[in-house]
Structures are given as C-alpha cells and as structure tokens.
Length: 427
Image (cartoon, rainbow, N blue to C red):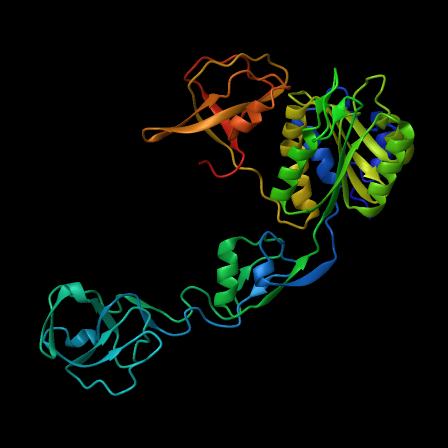
C-alpha cells in the first residue's frame, strides 16, 4: 500500500504529481530542503524480502529480525584483573596462597578460611571468595600475601550477565551491522543472522556532451564524472549497484533504458535531464511513464530535483552538474536509500563550530558550502574549500563536511559559529 500524508488521507503520489495544487503549501517552483525531505519520506516503502547470511558476510547489512542473547555474557563471575581472590571479612591478616585460577582453567579445590588464591584476568571466581585485590596492592613472602590497600567488598569482579543477560535484545531490527557487531554476535555464539535483501540500484547519466573514460575528448565534450561519484557513494551505502552507462539525448534510447532499469531494480537514479533545457527529454518520459514530482529546491547547489515512482521502482533525478549531483544525493537520496534498505531512521549528525573565513551568501535559500573541518589546538574549526561554484568538483574532493547555511542566514564574518555536517568520520 502506498504511504499517504496523515493530514491528507486521500493524497497519493499520482494525485500529487498530476495536481500540484491539491496541497495549499505545495509549490514545486519554491520547495524548501525540509519540505522536499518530508514529501519523499511519505512514499518510501522498505524492502520486505529477507535472507540468511553468515556473520563474516554481514558487514553493512540490515537486520530483519532482532537478535536476542541465548547466554549470559560473561557466563560466570570472573576476575577483572590479575590479583588475589579472597574473603573480604578475612582481609585483616596475611593470607595463605593455596592455588591459582587461570582464564579457562578454574580453581576447583576448597579454599580454607584464612586462605586465598592467585587469580588471572578472566578466571572464574570460586563460590567461597567474594573480592579480588590487584597484585600491585599486595606484598608476598613465600606462600603468604599481605593486603596493603584494601578494596571494597566485591571489588574487581565482573558478574554473570553483567554485559548481556540471557533473553536480552542486543541488536534491534533495522540495525545496520558494523564491525563491532560482528564480534558481539560471535561472542553470543550466533553464526548467522536474518537480514533484508540488498537494495538494487541502477543509475545512468544523460547528455550528448558526456564521454566515457578511455575515449578522446572532442570540442565541447567532458568526461562523465557523475557515474563514478555515484558509484562511490552507492558503494559506501551498501547497495547492489548497476551502472547503465551514459545515455545520449535520444528519446528512444532514454525510454528503453529507463523502463528496463525500473523493471529490474528497486531504485533508479539519473543525472541530468530534469531541468528545462530544450534537449531534456527525460522530463517528458517521466511524465509519460511514471508518477514523478519535479521540484526547484531553494538550495545551492542543486536546484533541480525530481522524485517519484516508475512502476514499483523509486526514481531520483539529480542535476547534471557534478557538485549539484553529489550534494542532492547526500541531502535527499542517501537517507531515502537507508530507509528503503530497512535501516532504522537516524539523522545525519550536525554540530556548530567556528568558521575561520568570511562567507558570502544571499538569504532565501539553503546553501551547502563545502568545508574542511580541522583541529586547532583543543577546538574543532572549519574553513571553506575556497570557490564554491557548482562546477568545481575538486571542492567535493577537498571537503570533509558541508557548511549548512539555512534560508535565513546571509553573509557571515570570519569567526562566526556555523553548522557543519560531516561526510563521515573526520581524519
């Protein structure tokens, strides 16, 4: 069933595409970034098919069912350090060392009163003792130990189930598996998990001016960089990617590629062909075969954007400009793909830092300027990458974050706090 707007229960994507005036605040020629994200979110339906994968093949996959623990972790009371295990009530006197407990080799003999055992980190705590003292806080003479700095009763013991208890949910449905999760699953004895099937994403670029790598450039031609940028961001997203190449501005070729892509994939992404240029045939094809919304987003870079459905496939039409294509992917497509993959919703983190250079900006639109987060003493700061033209792809390569400037923000002086959105972990 297609999602609907709760405030407009009879509205679906086809109605909105056919009649933009059915919502009072819907203006495709002046769409804010927030509104566009909201509208896209209404119509996303995650994949439902699942499969079983081994832990070693699970990195980046999304859990379809929660994982609960069948065991306690740790499975027994154990020592948190190397030292001596003893009865706290007997701490006032020197204690006789009657044996040693190792990790994986418990001490099973009796521990008489007035005695203790030497114990290694991870070793099982015998039931007749209740405290561990680190060896640095003791002195030994032969088989006797004197406790110099007495810890509290029960100190330095990791209790059964202290980390994870039997029956506890350790990973929720929608969780995307990270490296630490693989170790966690292994620690529980879990060898396989049920995950959603991979999302199948096809993409192609449009334009007669584009040339594939390995071919000589003629006058007026440029190399097709968008497909390689998309390959990179889609690979990082963990989807199954299908590069359909560059399709020339020929209506028949575009139609054939578009319909085949939509029939065989969950998502289709194109770059170019969604603006108002005379050779932009994509807009007519999308109106003919799909339920597609065409927006002019109040943002820079990346003003033209299309979203909708072609058959059962979700469609995203990104600008042909290389920087605009990447910015719109990060701001609209990336989170949509996570939702379609079944991943739990998680907003991209942002925080405020000082910008060390002045920024020129007009009010009335959101800008995503490319920035470089860097450490200055104890503080994080940011600077722009320099020129912010939408054709300067090197600005994306230099950057490790977006400087997010909302519609109300105008030009800023150096030293102003700005909101930044990191691409990933800053290095």
